[in-house]
Amino acid sequence: MSDSNMTYFTNPSTFILLGIPGLEWAHVWISIPFCIIYAIAFLGNFTIMFIVKTEPSLHEPMYYFLCMLAICDLGVSSSTVPKTLSIFWFNAREINFNACFTQMFFFHCFTVVESGVFVAMAFDRYVAICNPLRHSTILTNSVVAKIGLGVVIRGFMIVLPQPLLARQWPYCRTNVIPHTYCEHIAVVKLACANSNISSSFGLFQAFFVAGLDLFLIAVSYTQILRAIFRLPTKDAQIKTFVTCGSHLCAILVSYVPALFSYLSHRIGQNVPLYFHILIANVYLLVPPMLHPIIYGVRTKQIQDRLLQVIAHKGT
Figure 1 (cartoon, rainbow, N blue to C red):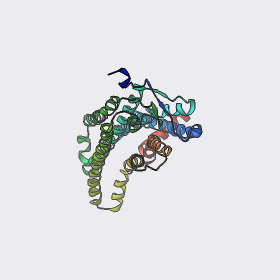
Figure 2 (cartoon, one colour):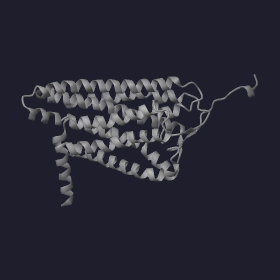
Figure 3 (tube, rainbow, N blue to C red):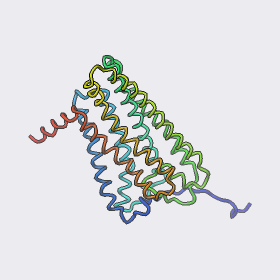
Figure 4 (cartoon, rainbow, N blue to C red):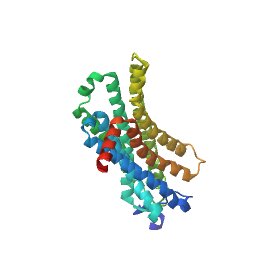
């Protein structure tokens, strides 16, 4: 067989991220709210971690998990947003082949770990409300550390096969990714081989993680609601339920945009591409910005410590 009849697959050294196709003319304007939201998320999550670290009364399981949530929020947004802004501001569209899959891994890993943190927080609320006298003996610092480590290892093990598998496909058709970051589906669609295994694994991963974690959260809150309704007075019921309000708000803020983004990508075939990409970026930006605001507004201990820090700096 002659060389002319043979096909050689060679992967590109770089991918080209287009940003938001169809809205290139608005990249600079879109970058303004993106940058503001990212700055608020960055400052807010670091503030939460600083307050918990410096306030001994906040050295409790709930706030340790809150710090883990803040780290995940920073990881999710910081693994993608700086590159997105460089595309918008400097037209820096190139990303190294290996760097693309590294970004894919960290983004998805932080997302899965964050989902696990929500389950841990739900378990903490379950123990605090259903077994309040045993809370400190069940959730010791050692147990909290083991739960945190388990959540991280789970995220690592679930996500690692995704970029490793995607990296094995030959990318010979084009190196242009119509997205602002190396999102899994956007990348594997470029493969010039049958990448159904990658697509199926990504689908399984999404349903397995979201389905399992939401089920565990639902079980925890079913038990919590049963315990609340057994309380003797309505005031006690309301007061106890309010303690879970921040966690429930944070869950909704995280899962609703993610579900909307996923459904618009899988079902909304007639939806413009730029809409898919904007929704995907909303999922990256809005929850990390809102989580510290939710906990800051609804948690009196955090409010009091923050006011002390501000007052001290003002003197």
